[in-house]
Length: 208
View 1 (cartoon, one colour):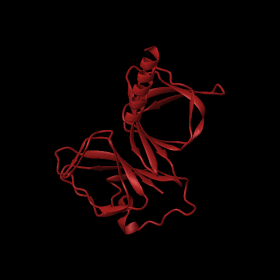
View 2 (cartoon, one colour):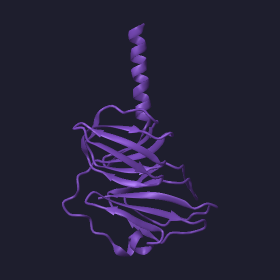
View 3 (cartoon, rainbow, N blue to C red):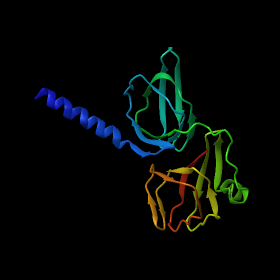
View 4 (cartoon, helix red, strand yellow):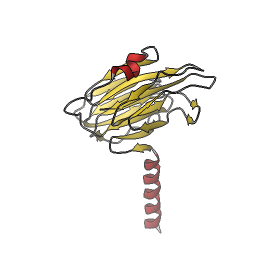
């Protein structure tokens, strides 16, 4: 009986862990993680480079295996590049849970970055609504928003594709998504309209 209960507990934990994975394809793995306050994580490492989208403000203490300690503060809506690294633990030292979308980049940087058509580049077309956050050999990341009633210019996200992480709820015609939801698409040329009464905002992660 005790063995059966142990197996059921392990299975429940694995199921709960699997529920955190929202997208898993050949390009990215997306984890919707919540760090409870004052719960120190186990010693671990990250094998892949990641894009971190912080949905909540959070204060973290990261302790490395060699004894180094980092104190980090992240604001709600802040985005960061997190290179793969060594063994460490992490603890949310604030009073509230902190939700973060972790986007693991599976592909290595291409030998030659893909060429872009500037006439269809959303940042070049509309820098007011599409603000570059960072651009490196693996990803280009920008913040995109649209006011109520606004329509984007026709633009493209080149192959292999892009991930959109919602910072607000989205109600754009046939497409609906909740804050924190991660939406993957392959290469696409499109223009989205916001027919709702509230602006929407998202982080766009283009994979190279």
